[in-house]
Image 1 (cartoon, rainbow, N blue to C red):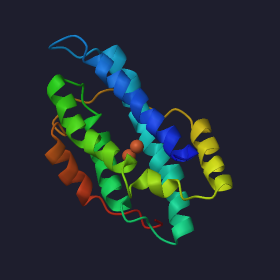
Image 2 (cartoon, rainbow, N blue to C red):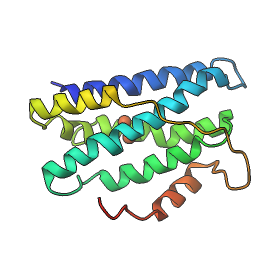
Image 3 (cartoon, rainbow, N blue to C red):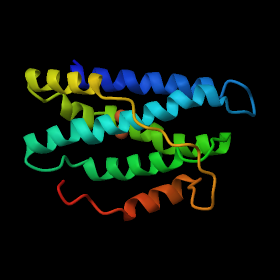
Length: 167
Ligand SMILES: [Fe+2]
Ligand SMILES: [Fe+2]
């Protein structure tokens, strides 16, 4: 049975999916009002995984979980695809990373299954910290020459980022 950490984060995946679907409701257009909570919510969701859950797992396992590196690269790529003003083409690029990413987190042997191995007290504390985690600051859209618009480009750039020294 799914534990509290996986339930919390899977519910967040579903909530973000709903906002994104809503933003695509009008054929040929993107509803920016519906997209805004998807964008802010996905950035916060990434922070919950990178700043709350992964450090706890790293500490308990005595090192990074096996999927941490790939998740970090994909999180970085998703964050950079959230920078420009969305178009339907851009959202297709986001989904090409996000759908398999979420499936991997939720799947057998994935991040959330690993989170469910945490002792009850620790899992409860992780959920409490995630619930209390503040909204993240969201910058204005940037559509200049350095904006990433394809998954391939965003993943390649993100893979070049160095691992933070303390992690
Ligand atoms: Fe993630
Ligand atoms: Fe996630």
